[in-house]
Image (cartoon, rainbow, N blue to C red; front, side, top):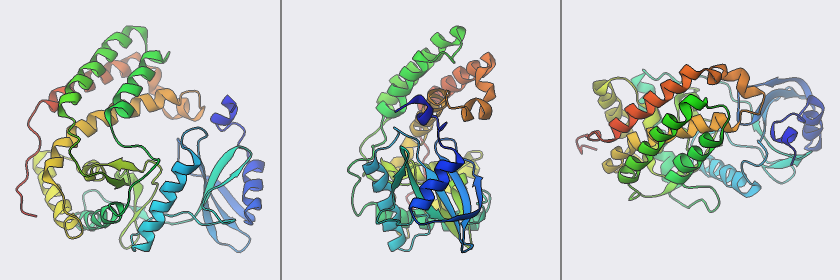
Length: 328
C-alpha cells in the first residue's frame, strides 16, 4: 500500500461519499471531521435526518479480523446492557471497505464530558467497568494483542532509535533512560494476572456522560489486566488517589472481583504508556496531521524533558506500590 494511503492523503470527500453510498447511506449534510489522529472520523446526517459517525481505520494498523474482534466485543457489551458505542451492521457486516480503506459506521451519540472530580460519576463509571470486565471474561480475544513489554517498550525503543525527529544530542541519553526503564520494568512487570478483554484506553476523554457513562472508542481494545481500564481515571495527590480508588473499587466490585495485587502494576503501566505514546507520535510523523498537532516535538527542550520524565518514572518504579485495605 502506498505511503499516501497510509497517511490518508487519498481519503478525500468523494471517496468518503462513495463509500457511504455503497452501504446505502445517503449523506445529506455534515461530513464534519471529528478529533482523531490515529483514524479519520466524520459526523454526518443522512437523507432522513439521522445522524451517524463514520470511522476510516488507518491502513496497516489492524487486520480485518482484529477490527471485527473489537466490534464483537462492543456488541457483547451491548447485549449485556453496557452503554458503549457499537458499529452498525451494513451489507451484512460491521466492517466494510472502499478504495483500500476499511471503515465502520456508528450512531452519533452526543453527551457531556465526564467530570473527573465528580464522585457520583466516578462511582457510576466504576460500576460499569465492573460490568465491562464481567463481559470481558466470558471469552478471549484470538487476534488482538496482549499488553506486554515488547509492544510497549521494546518496539517503541527501536522506533525512537531510528527516528530522525529525535535530536542527535538527545538520542543517546533518551535511549539510556528507556533502557533503564526497561531493565526495571522487567523486574516489576508481574504477569500473574487474569487476562480479560479490555477497553484498553479508558481515559476520561473516552467517556461521555448521558444520564450515566457512555464508553466510546474501543480502538485500542486488547487483552490485559483489569487495572489497565482503571488507573488512568485516578489523579491528584496520594490522599486524593486513595479516595478515588475507594470509590472506583467499591463500585467495581459490585459486578467483578478486583485483585488488589494488580495495584502494583499502576506505575509499570504508566511507564509503558509514556514510552509507547512518544514512539506513537514519532511513528506517525509522516502523517501531516501529526506535525500540526504536536509542533513541540521538533524542539530539543521537549526531548530533554522526556529524558527527565523517564528518569523520574524509573525512580517511581522502585518505590513501594499503592496499598489499599482489602475492604471490598
